[in-house]
Image (cartoon, rainbow, N blue to C red; front, top):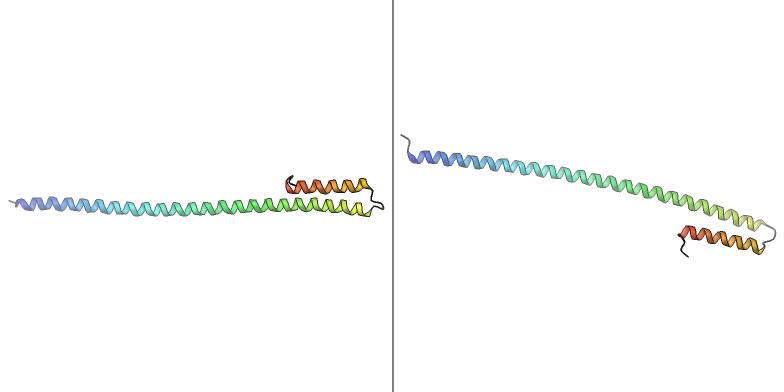
Length: 114
């Protein structure tokens, strides 16, 4: 017959083995969750960089469009000024039209601010 302590020791050993196995499973789950979290974080960082790059490109395109528009309008004003300077006599009406054109362009370029 088995000694009573032997049976109890076997049960304790089995319980300890189950606890150790559960602990190992928990450790594996923690490591896996950490790896998944790191991958998700890297994906989020990649997405944030892509969004920032897209926004930067849109801002650059807008800036370029505005610069082109300003250059076009400035060239038109320069042409108007040149035409007025070429005219033989600068009448007060011509000077007033020139000043109005300059004022209008200035308002447009500054968003209506004086």
